[in-house]
Length: 518
Image 1 (cartoon, helix red, strand yellow):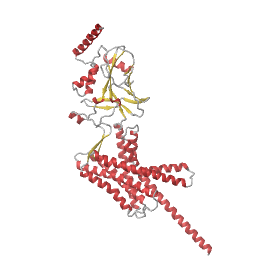
Image 2 (image 1 turned 180 degrees about the vertical axis):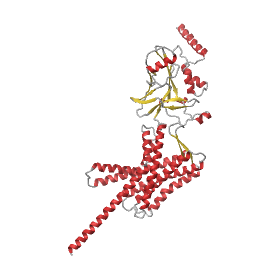
Image 3 (image 1 turned 45 degrees about the vertical axis):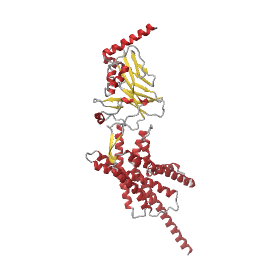
Image 4 (image 1 turned 135 degrees about the vertical axis):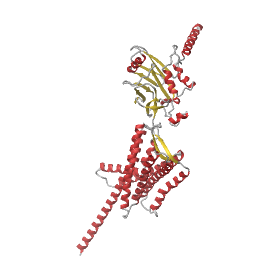
């Protein structure tokens, strides 16, 4: 027994001595060697060393290192740690050709589990300072990165993609297959080029046409750059159309100003005015933020945009309050100088808020990083202090939505109660369409679509869908409010015509009875 142990010890020493003499580390030691030598960037050091490392003849078990010598046309490696790699025959043949071997030569498949902290998404400015940006690092499945190497040369542009299966026990988790792209200057970022994501029994299956460092980006809250471009175009077109329709609504209101005006119409017009200013200030902020040496102008536009947004939120809350008075408290709702008081609240609260924020110098150029990379960002003149934005935008919007959703529920309950007391209508389909249109108009008037902004920040499979719906509904909100205003105006005219016809008919019948009695 002692002789066997001694022989094994001598054999291991021989192997380690041979490795030391050649200067090439063992493959399972590569990540540690790169970190010990401070050879940055670490992914590039690991990538290069893994293609030149040597496999010890004595099998050593490492918890994060896996090796397989392949002599067949296809191969599958199960790490037994939740990762399965399936190498296609094309990838093996390509690797054999690169090594100059024949069709039957063996190929080494190396798989290494690496900690996600080795892969930092870095901007150019961060790299110049020698630091990596940590506040925009994505969340990776299992907190691990899967490095896969086949032979000593790169394998890419495969027509038969290799498959990597990431075991997943959370059925509500959404993921995106990505790989680490190494730039020429040492920077790197997660990209999706050449990789497709599919779900098989809750597992993430990545089909990629190359080998590299792979990971699954869990629940990417922000879509890729192509989606951001589409969302920006939708915002710009929607804002332009909303400006046109809200301006038309204001002109229609001014033309009818001499006539008796309903309070509801007046509140709709005030909301439209705030939306008109909001979309104009938004487009101006986006345009001026891209100009140079306009810091003072950008601060002023950021203040204006903030003021318009708060005014829009406030007037949506006033819409909910007015609906409550009209449908719930029908009687005894006379308020002296009602419109003046509403105007003071609707325009005064935002003015007071932005004055305080302006004193603290909370405005300037701001960048929305939409895809976790600096390459796709929306420049805007906006609030640059996070705590101010959270309190005056997120917090205020949350309170307004909470109030308006409660008002909407009360109003819908009241309408249902009135419908149950009214005679039944034969055309149920038409009534259903009218009810849905009315609900959409009420929701837009009460600012309910703004609530989708909160859903886009959650870890949710429909975050991208919610972002598109949010952009469309709020970008085109001016058009929807115009249609709601037009419907309300036509309904008021129709009721006046019916009441006037009823008065004429009653008068005619009274005269006829008078003539008959004579």
